[in-house]
Picture 1 (cartoon, protein in one colour):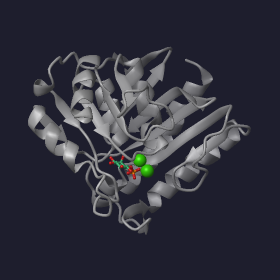
Picture 2 (tube, protein in one colour; picture 1 turned 90 degrees about the vertical axis):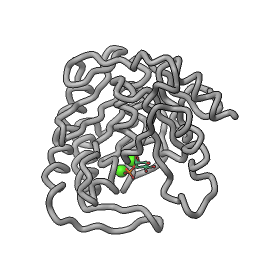
Picture 3 (tube, protein in one colour; picture 1 turned 135 degrees about the vertical axis):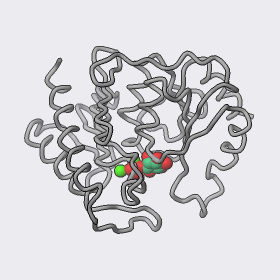
Length: 255
Ligand code: IPD
Ligand code: CA
Ligand code: CA
């Protein structure tokens, strides 16, 4: 196991443990950008992660959701979502994760997503994806009508018509089931693990997707934009699925 992976796994576990401790406690919660919640644990987790990266890799850039740059520069850059699923977390709904990715020249080379409540560590190594040490692969489902899909909705749902409700309706009648669990990082990890057959969402941020994108790719899945082009760090509308389902999802998105 290389040093970056060892470091990232240990860091995700530390941040996850902090989030787990705070989960059942009363927390300070504030609002950002109108409708988005931030808890004191988003900030504490981000601080812990940033300090550890700065200590270990002082020359690396860090993109972090709450307090640092949202730009990614060349060279090594960490992409940090200290708590994905904040709305769930603030409500005591047990679906959230820490998501850490490392990019080199804007290409994701390492992805780790840790769910501390289930003690599930999803990570990539040597071109493959793993969950707690076991290889994971995308599901083998061939037909959209037999598929379990997931999605999410942007925070500005009521302010902008581009809010995913049209696609939600279309996929509702085409798939076997839809889930909206509230953590894009875990949605992607679940596609990689074959627990979900596909996932789509729009207006996501790099830190929601960076680690999950590589997990899906290395588990044999396809991750693209709504235009069908390969996912990059700049893509904010994504479709991730096994190759059969991806193809069928793209037809619906294009229709
Ligand atoms: C959110 C979650 C959610 C998605 C939102 C994201 P946050 O991230 O991933 O599933 O629907 O678009 O912003 O704010 O909990 O880190
Ligand atoms: Ca997020
Ligand atoms: Ca977050």
